[in-house]
Image (cartoon, rainbow, N blue to C red; front, side):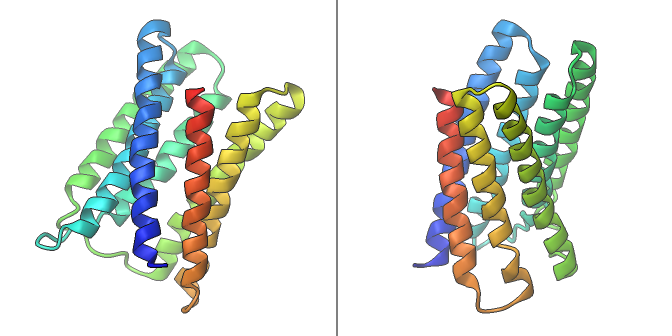
Length: 207
């Protein structure tokens, strides 16, 4: 299978699925005024933008767009804020976190705006660290929901923990490609795992 096919499918699913979740989160935020919902919506929006930017950079051949910095950092930062929103309990703390998230998103959008002039990753180590960070934060989120599942079993906890596990495995499987050649099949399997994770993620939040 052409690796570009699975990558494009992944990016399209990420964009559509996470924008759908973001829209639902923002609608609920207008009703409930929960900072946690705003953080979720903003995180989903940024992740959707990273996928859309990556997809667009592959289609545009007349303009050089290095969106990898925005892709890796944007997804990591978004997952970090989702985790922090789960760890913070008080409303004032969540509101402060929300304002920091807005600031961080502004900086990420500025980074996206620099895509035409940004250099490639300086070395393989930088790309590996940034990619590994996404794997670890998704695994931490999986662990959080697993602990929640143990204390209080709900369908949402089951689905969301499965989604983060699939995303974590998917991110992990693309790491060998950065260090060893001729392992593109692992990259494709990783894309498929993340596609499954996105589907489960969408089902968890939309049902």
